[in-house]
Length: 310
Ligand code: NAD
Image (cartoon, rainbow, N blue to C red):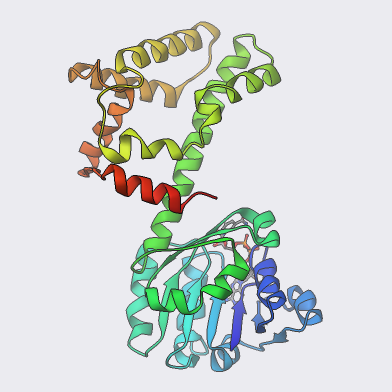
């Protein structure tokens, strides 16, 4: 089995090396030839062009900046579509648009080549240590066939669903991360400006309910199960607390854009008459706006939770 790897940058360089370390024959390519020095030293071969890699590889991985580069590598005259063998597979490890992945897929499928979107999460440290999540969308049999190579790249390779599903998971993950990040920056700056030492504050909040929970684990409770009664924390109490926080922010002159937005949500939920339900019931408002109702059984949530324990 010959593995092709295109894009030896911050992420791809280490990922390609880890595939080689797992014992595979790897042919590498990047616009910048010098990036491949350490790969050639480790026993990889150099592919002069994308076409050359496409011609010999049974499975190809790409780690490219974004949709523009992915489309070039796919559809250039000397690109993957023109050169890959029927029966071969292409996993794109870049972060790209689900729409772009869904547009690429049928053109390769028509030639008997499986294209899978497989974005990763874990940063350069994870890429080097092999501790990455890989979220894969596309043909499940192809995912299973090449799972051993994915396991050389990351410790959490997961099949998510049809083409594009991996990218959707990645975008949800990152949007959540950055929104949470902005919110944490907001409340933390308020706390510091209100007179608490940063490390004391950090130490304090880490020991609280949110500090102990892994942020996303919490979604498995009320939100995913559409289960807001009986409450574990009543909406009216949450509304009071967030009102207090925004009042304090006004007192100390800190803008709290996201927290004020969160308070608007809680107020709207209160006006629905939900004050005695669990405070997370405000998440239903966003479900309404999005035209989505999430309502999973407790057993399914539990099974998924166990699957994700690591
Ligand atoms: P990078 O810019 O370091 O690497 C991209 C590589 O692709 C470069 O070495 C570039 O020369 C090469 N390249 C571009 N066009 C090419 C072409 N036509 N032919 C051959 N090689 C080409 O970027 P990165 O940080 O390694 O990220 C790669 C992908 O992974 C991106 O989609 C990024 O969003 C995603 N990602 C990055 C991180 C991170 O922390 N850096 C984490 C998760 C996901």
